[in-house]
Amino acid sequence: MTDPLNDAVRKIKIQQKPKASPVQSPAPPPQPKPFYDDEPWPELPKDNEKPPKAPFPLMALPKPMQAYCKAVSTAMQTPVEFAALGVLGAIACAIGASTKIEIKPGWQEFAVLWLALCARPGTAKTPALNACFKPIRGIQKELNLKHSQAMSAYKDKMAKAKKDPTVEIPVKPLAEFLLLGDITQEALVRTLAESPRGGAILSDELTGWIGGHDKYTGKGNDRQAYLSLWSSLPLSVHRKLDGVVSVNLPVLSVVGGLTPSSLPKLYGGQEDGFLSRFLIACPEERQGVYTKEGISEVQALDYCAYIRKLWELEPEHRDETGFTPRTVILSEDAETLFMPFYTEMQASLVGDALPGILRGSFCKAPSQVARVALILHWGRQVSGEEDDPYRLSADCMDAAILIIRFFLSHLRSMESLFHAGATKAGELRVKVIEWLKKYSSNSKYKGLPASWHDIRHNVRRIITNHDGKVDDHALTQCLDGLQTTCHIRQVCPEDKYGNKLKPLVYINPSLSQISQ
Image: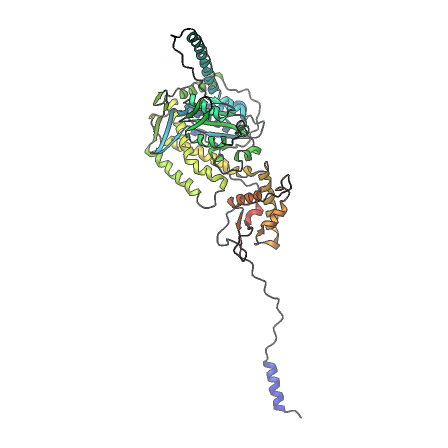
């Protein structure tokens, strides 16, 4: 017999018993924290979004240069940048070692410019450059004729000296050059030693000039010699017959054209500062139309006379040992403009915001400003736009900064072209970026790093040599380059013994939105 009291208590307990909660799915595992999550990734340019190219500041040039650039551009239906680069190179060649600029004690620059005009074939870049260097060719022709006449007189005197011992043996005349072409390092040093004013190399295709480095000697030091030449450092070569030939103040500009597909050859995959010495312009193409306008005889004669006046600029002192250049110093107003630009360029080198391939160019930008300012200074002196020949005005400094900003903007817009697939290294880079974009766009791997071995497997074809061996070093260099440009970040884990393993590759989230 049941107890009514126990039954009542039992019912109350059942009513008070908490109901079982519905079955819940297990909580999702925590997402792994991306590497460097506390350090923001820089934004990369999106597809077809390139940094804008600044137009060339034509008004920054001396007035005679402006007029001639417009005439060449109209006559040849080319962008005005073609003629602007040619004119700057011609003036640098004409001035040579006759003058220098002193930024501050211990920091001096010469009128040395390495200018590269980047445009597709058939855009008339070579005719435009040749039109600007026509006065230089005319001066060189006169120098050749003068040397030919001197050599004839030398041979006559030598013939007399051989017959008559009392006749003094004459000194062999030296051949002076302003314009050079394909030349070996040994011949270049000898030529510059005989031409203390310096000159320029004018090349239709700069990649041909670069490919000619070490062509004859095979010793592999021509590129290094040109690196020193840009800074006008003393050079010397040892010759079996003449002993040591040296030049204490080599001043040599380089001007030429190249195509966008050959930009990787200019870079060469080497962070040796060769690329950063060039001022490169890649202007937008212009659709030409036939015009009856040409470069008039008056315009050509005026330009030739203008360049000749610059070539006739005398140094401070000249003797058998060489030149003592005139020195131009900065005015207070010019220094006031130069200091913030210098600070700005130095600030751009801090952190990873600036791609590694551009760092050298931004580092050398203040020196390039000083060189262009020196050229503009004497250009305006000759045209009567400046009064003080030994003090740089603020106008010249401001104009030089505008011109260098123009070149820097073009360099930024071309950054991806230096890595293009024209070379094996460029092809590898394109393939790696392509695979990384696919990997990062897969939701399965979102936030997770890619393994070095997975990347290696997918690009194995490109990095396999003719002997069948896989070039892991090429892949390592490629990934290091992508890390420099902020596309990826690498971290090397350790095994339980503390040994470094192959890196894990963390991918910039904006990589899936960019072009290669």
